[in-house]
Amino acid sequence: MHNTVRLTSPLQIAAWAGIASSITVFAVIPLYFVHDGPPPADNVFTRCLITLFTAAFLLAFFSGFAHLIRRQGNDHEWSASLFWGTSLLYVGFILLGAAHEAGSAFNAPGVDDPTIDGLLADANILVHGSIKRILTAILLLTAAFAIRSTRMLPNWLASASAAIAVVNLAFVPSIYFGKCPTAFYSAIGWGNTALTGSLITYWIIAASIAMLRAVRTGQPHLRIHADT
Image (cartoon, rainbow, N blue to C red):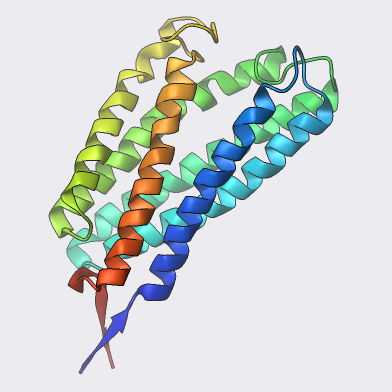
């Protein structure tokens, strides 16, 4: 016998976590511009603290999205596993980047700018650049494939996923173009990190809204059948 079970609670939690993660991302941006020169340690620690909450919210969102894929049937288990595994790496590198910034603040508070100065800043170049770009591309291509094949969410979200993934892939080779932060296309340039890196945040907002909308309209794809 099969019972139809609504995924309302976990899906709503995941969607609101996605929106919360975006709020924390936007909240941390001004902290990078409030000081001329190297920021004080408290500024860096505040940025890192907010980033910890961002990571926590992202874990909830990504797990909910993977759960939604998995519930569409056994044929989609591979997509769910790839999405979830990639998301763990993505969040892990967010935390690694925060750890490097905090390390600079502990080592030389108010002396080094942890985003551009010192060995730990250099260690963050690939973390914020090519590593996140390739992980974002895999994550969103998987999401696009899952949405297209299951129709669990609107097709426009799959198209947006694929488009953002392609843009991210275009910046993976930026490792060869130096580390000037004011350049558009460099390993740590603003086009690579600030612009392209922000696109996944907008996708998460869109996906979260689509998930909440799907719950509210009661789409049949948001049902599972549990054997009893």
